[in-house]
Image (spheres, rainbow, N blue to C red):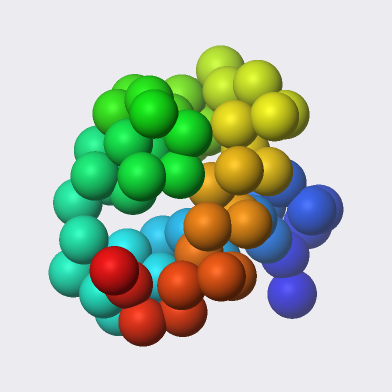
Length: 65
């Protein structure tokens, strides 16, 4: 179990990237037009809006593109 919702979200993103083989910059572009979005999430510099957009994208696309 993760410590909090942010950690759970980061874990979900990492697992999805591993499963799909997609690069984090591509995910950021597709989810919120920001190739640095996932890197910003990892460094805790992302906006909540972009964090949500990335999570919504991976939930809507469980197998990638």
